[in-house]
Amino acid sequence: MAAVQLPDAASLQRTDRVVKKVEEIVQKTPGVKYCTSIVGYNMISQVMNTYSGFFSSPLRSGRNARSLKRNTKQSRRTSIVPCSR
Image 1 (cartoon, helix red, strand yellow):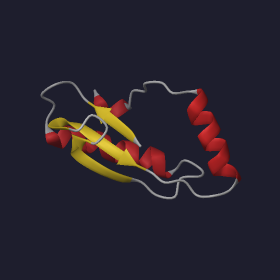
Image 2 (image 1 turned 180 degrees about the vertical axis):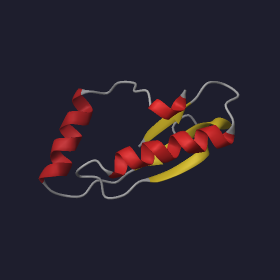
Image 3 (image 1 turned 90 degrees about the vertical axis):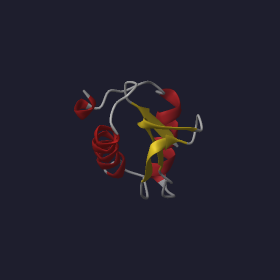
Image 4 (image 1 turned 30 degrees about the horizontal axis):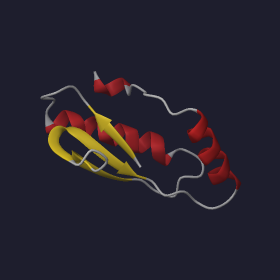
């Protein structure tokens, strides 16, 4: 699970563009089965607004998934998606 949060009062359309870009990045990641997103709601913080989005991306079984899990745990950090500005 992951969440995206744009600046306060960002439009739903802007948030949707960012969420689609993140989906593209996640779906190209080895070991990810698929990516489901929700725009306008953050399931982690349980907040509904125009500037939040939520992702769920189950992993495939196998070596790529194990490697992805290990790398994700080691490098939890905030990232900036280029189209979010």
